Length: 338
Image (cartoon, one colour):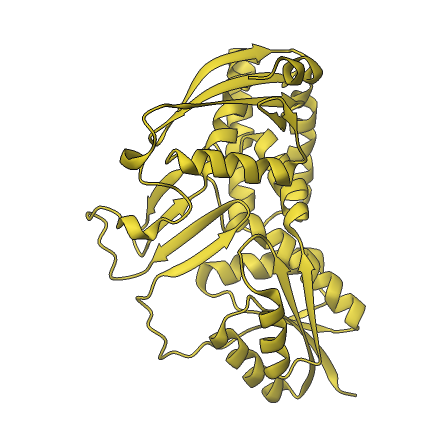
């Protein structure tokens, strides 16, 4: 019997070549999975590339609402983004959940992915936690590929340009590395005032307009990006990541402000510990674990007191709290507007 293999395919040409090589090596009946996570790619073109690489079936799924509702919403409430947006790691649980679901639908016992290095470890940990019966393969990339070329990852939550070695950690970030946020010094001199209504730790409205979480993220992302808000520059010993996550910056500040105004000192200290643990859990690929369920339980219990609204001023790259309403019903906040 021909073995069946499902490959997580992001849409790159080198990924398509790697898929073709793996399918021949394993002599497998091949299906691919591509998720729309807000990366702005031509999904029909991706489908055609997958079929050209040898896929008998090319699954394409819109997972933007799932990313927002099942990952971003609880992580925001927990405070997991207050130390940084985690714009790449938040997508892994969604990708793996769909990869496992498609593998079971296809009757496949093997899956493959294109992650490498530390990302590969985290990706495979997620698969092992969710479907330990699956055999996992990593796609072999063309080693002639320029290792120093920047890697660009984009989704609903943010855009990341990762610069590998040799990375100059001292140099100013090149302005052309950013496309989702304006240069702060070129932004309007007049600030934007944004009011975020929050119900039980979840942002539910912007300037009096109620929105689903995925729509709300897009709206805040656009407003904040136009005012240069949401740029992060993260360095490690081996790489440098230039991140744009305008909505993450604004929404994290709003929820942290409401928590600070709602909780006493002991509760804030405990929430801070839980937030750091939640962030580490996302980064390390431990989403599908009992530990995450336990943290969600704490977050849900403490969120009973996290309702109200926060008013923020966005001006040339800065996000500043200029008002808050603690404990007000969301209906009051939305009715009051900005």
